[in-house]
Amino acid sequence: MQYTWSDIEQHISACTQCPLSRTRHLPVMGRGSHEAHIMLIAEAPGGQEDQQGLPFVGRSGEILDSLLKDCGLSREEIYITNILKCHPPGNRDPKEEEKEACLPYLKYETFLLKPRIIVCLGRVAAQRIISPDFRITRQHGTWTYRKNCALTAVYHPSAILRDPSKYEEAKRDFLEIVRMERESS
Ligand code: URA
Image (cartoon, rainbow, N blue to C red; front, top):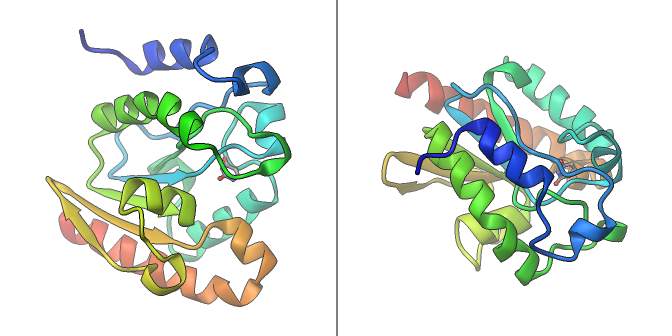
């Protein structure tokens, strides 16, 4: 059976596959264009995302919007999602069992979107999606190819909040992502 976007959203809204369903306020489904060529994948919703049910609405969302704007992109032309759809209390790293429980949703999102480019935001996403030994400091901006999709990783916006000197590196990586996307169109 082929799920639709709204089927996935309904499943996520009612999900009780892991204990985070008991502590979350709202689950956070991916948002953006269902025609996008670029899919951004981060680790898990933060506190403000948990309150609003939307990805990247907090301070790291401001950094992300600024990076996108500097590279001529907007949220309307890309798709942004997380590995976990529920907020881990205290913003701790997602647990293995939480990631495994939530991964089918990401797989359905990826299947429906069929992105040409997947961008992992930060170490946790890069290690789950690209390679378990991915080193974000050394390997951000590098590319891996799988089937018809190019995968890369950039610094997580919250890492840029902690260390603003990472902004220019993330911007360079995003400019290359835009160049790759235009080349593939
Ligand atoms: N951090 C994330 O990893 N995801 C969000 O949606 C917001 C903050």
